[in-house]
Amino acid sequence: MNIIACCKIVPEEQDIFINADGTVNTAKASPKISQYDLNALEAAVELAAGAGGTVTVLSAGVPAALDNAKVRKDILSRGADSLSVVVDAGLEGALPARTAAVLAEAARNMDFDLILCGEGSGDLYAQQVGILLGEALGAPCINAVSSITLADGVARVERSLEKETQVLEIPLPAVLSVTSDINTPRIPSMKSILGAGRKPVHAGTPTTGDGTLSQTLSVLAPEQVKRLGDIIEGDSDENIAAFAEKLRRIFQ
Image 1 (spheres, one colour):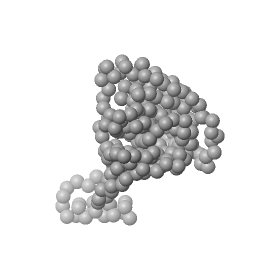
Image 2 (cartoon, rainbow, N blue to C red):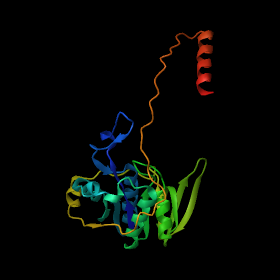
Image 3 (cartoon, rainbow, N blue to C red):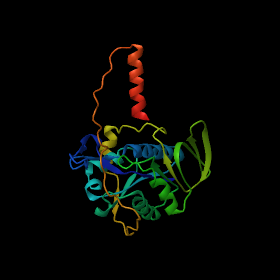
Image 4 (cartoon, rainbow, N blue to C red):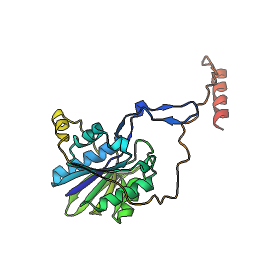
């Protein structure tokens, strides 16, 4: 069983700040694995341990993120057997369709039975890459997966819906996007961290053109609404009625 876990490298949220004009500044933000992709990686490692097989992490992004030795070691210390990166400066701010196309090109050159993605990314959270990746590969794909069991060339998956749990059987190879409820990502041990440096890393560049039909115009933080500072003190009927009337005017 050969499993690919797709991981995106995103800016550390605590290092992001907002400029005066509302633009998002990530200049001083350290790169890290998207939190949602940690669940995909953990699921891949657990499935490979149960079914026997290997786990390859596949990531696409800009050189500054994927050339980072700390990030690579962090990925490989979490149970993956190898790391394959697609590096290109043109992937700066790539939208889901472009990211999926680059990942699909790389995956076609890899032997896989299952590809796992996180439910979204820590920056855009578009929740589209997994579905677009499956479409590009011509493989069955499904999102919102909260449980996976492998047997006889089939992935039995569960999806938690609003009032029920949906159980599906997906023939392999397939692309699945998992939710953050599927597991709790492991904390790498010191032994795993030290051993990560000896695991193979394969690097390449995309050959597919951009070909996307959309572009990012701007990324802005929500405008802050100034507080009214309108205070009503006391719990008399008149004060409660006045409070209710103010709420009615705000939400009407």
